[in-house]
Image: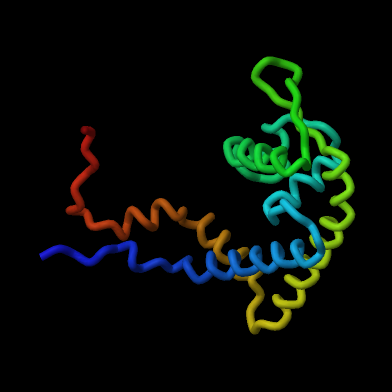
Length: 166
């Protein structure tokens, strides 16, 4: 007899679904406002580019707190949408990214949306009997005391077969 599929349990699925629904609502707000070709994940990068000027993809990834690979894909999508241009950087391995006129024109709207979104988060946080910010801080503190990896390892079946190389 085979064991049940462990992926049918997913404690974080409701949170991911909630965050996706919120991102979808932001995307609908953009569409309702006539903002075409802009995804919510572009906002922080476009605002940072406006405030910092031309920077490398790697530096932009650090500013936005995503991987270099993820930012490289985002820059490609933003370039396709006509929001940014890129050019060779100070060395052969880097690319500088900067806003186009269209990208610059969108920044005031994106900054207003960002500020409103933060205000709505504050409002939602006050509406529930427990603060999401507090939950996150408490979870971070618990993981400082005992890392996630250690907790997983302690829960794994000690008889689980070790991975084997092909």
